[in-house]
Structure formats: C-alpha cells, structure tokens
Amino acid sequence: MHCTNCGQEIANNAAVCTHCGVAVGQEKKFCANCGQAVNANQAICLGCGCAIATNRPNEQNKSVASLVLGLVGLIAWFIPLFGAPVSIVGLVLGVRKKYTTGIVLNVIGLVLTVANAAIGAYQGATGQYPLFN
Ligand SMILES: [Zn+2]
Ligand SMILES: [Zn+2]
Image (tube, rainbow, N blue to C red; front, top):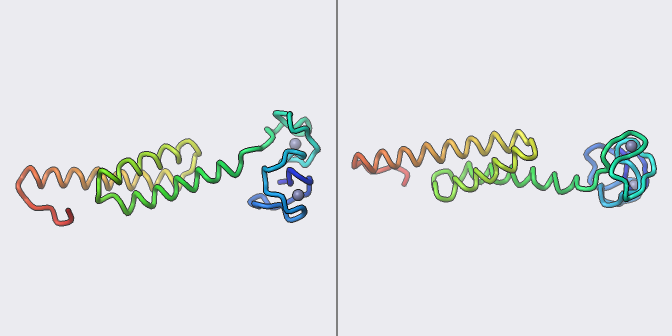
C-alpha cells in the first residue's frame, strides 16, 4: 500500500508511514492503493477506482474488540448472565467485520454459556447440586 500523506510505498500492515511518520489513514492526500495524488473530497481514486480509505484504524479496533470479547466469553462462560451478552456482542462485531477468529471464539463462548446454563437448569430441576456453580 501507499502512505496517504506522502504517497511513498509502505508495508501493508504498517500503522505509521516509515517515510513521513504520519499515521496510516490520518491524511487523504494520496491514494493508499496506487499512490496517486487525490483530493480529500473525492470518494474514490481516479487512478485505480478504489475507495479512498479514511477509517482503516477504526476497523482494526472493532476486530480487536471482537477478539477481546471472544476471549472474555471463553473465561466468563460459567457465569451465564455475564458470558452470554459478552459473547453475543463479540459475535455481532466479528460478523460485521468478517473477522473469523472473533466469530469462532465468540461462538465457542456462547455454546459453553448455553451448555452450562442448560446443565445448571437440569441439575437444579432434578435436585442435584452443580459442581461448579
Ligand atoms: Zn508517508
Ligand atoms: Zn488509486
């Protein structure tokens, strides 16, 4: 990709340009895809037709949020009232951002939460004492 501030080529996963030091996506002076100079008001680059990226850092943050919620869900599954909402929110974020790791983690967290709630309800109904509640 190209730096959107100076137009130099930089690594695809760079957070800050190694030529000018400006954070990726902060400026809109150049196309991130082809490096052509663009106007900040343009919706797409006239050189390659790509959308002019402005919100890449935000998208990364949502993926990270999905990952964190997934991990929290894996730990919190034994408290259904806490684990279920965490896993559901994380799952929604993961699906919106097409973030596979977040989706998988949150599905596992949700399954564990539901399984634990079902076991707890069954044991409560049959008069047994749950081991982990
Ligand atoms: Zn730069
Ligand atoms: Zn372009």
